[in-house]
Length: 115
Image 1 (tube, rainbow, N blue to C red):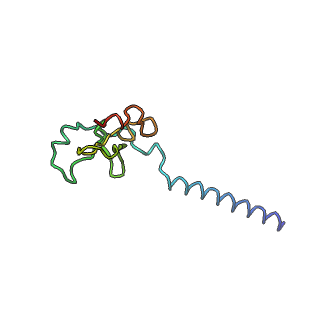
Image 2: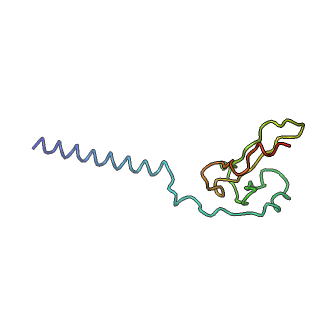
Image 3: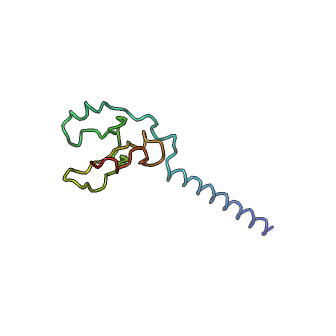
């Protein structure tokens, strides 16, 4: 009888432990259904006319999607130019409008830009 109660206690403790791990896993990582799928799209011309500051929203210059404080743009800087002109930045977009999984530099190679 003591062996039976010990096995039931170990089984019950194991079930409670595994359920606790599963509940903790759900609270640590938000599910994809909780994230807003459709982000608001703003007119870039109207946003650029606004005075710069904290109230001015951050938008993607390619698609106009409103970006949060932790969102980023996918861009590349060209190598140091041989002439006296400034370096150019090529903005490919944000993670919401750039869907190829990374920066695609094969469409426009940076070496073709140099005069």
